[in-house]
Amino acid sequence: MVPDCAAWLASGCDPTLAGRDPAWLASIVPIGTLADGATARQLAYGPAESVGGVPLGVVPGGVTVEFWLGDCSPIGRWTRIWPPSGGLRWGAGSVVVPRGAAWMTVTANDKVNLAWRLT
Image (cartoon, rainbow, N blue to C red):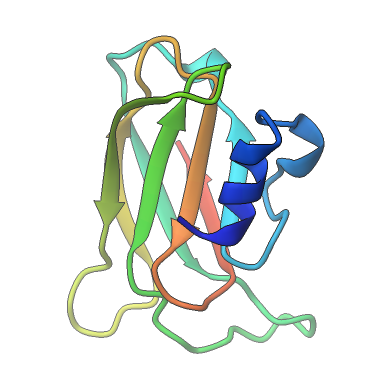
């Protein structure tokens, strides 16, 4: 587990430590409104752009997606999503948000700041 997620868990899931980009390697976002346990959603991710808007030009590797109950207990099994082979910069995979999930964490497997979207 990356240090930012560990600190968030140790805090009792303090919402002030959560966010789309609270730290370099992780996102911690509320997900309760999507937690129906049935709908397959697409998570697409890639390297965030630099300040000047120029892509970083690196392959981010995979990401790990985990879901958490409101009391900070994990729910379901974590999912690892890998980009397709061939050096493409964006990867995508399907996730189902478990019923009762309150939080989702998305963490990078490499030292890359991620941009991601869940549809």
